[in-house]
Amino acid sequence: RHGAVLLCDRLISSAAAATTMVKKRTLHPRPLLDHSALLAFFDEHGWKEASARRLAGAVVRDGKAVSQVKDLPADAYDELPRSFAELTSTVESETWSLDRTTTKLLVRLGDGQRVEAVIIRNHH
Image 1 (cartoon, helix red, strand yellow):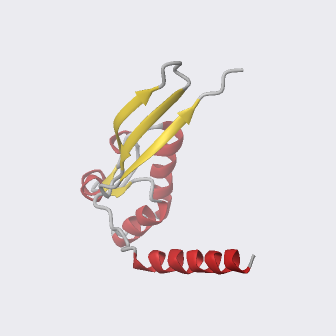
Image 2 (cartoon, helix red, strand yellow):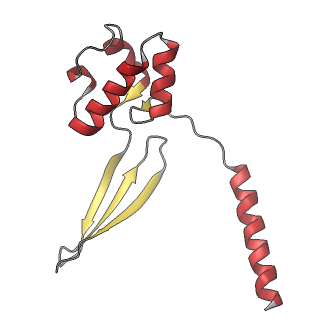
């Protein structure tokens, strides 16, 4: 039992050390869905926060592109695409199981890292 606790402490210490060594990633362009970055960007340009919230709502709720959102500051339509992307992740590959109940996806994130995801469909 003592050995298990010691091993657990070492694993936690190793995980904490690894966490502190990870570099902070800066995405460019930034994801449009990064709400705090979007608010800061609007603030930096002297644009109203309400416009940023309207944009975020239209993109998330209504699935609109930036160009389809009405009543943004005129220069926002040119400035936003230089700093933000509507989509920052892409599916590189997908593999279906023979019975079509699971799909394995390889997704490339905006920072170039790749992750695998598995979608499992439960048919009742």
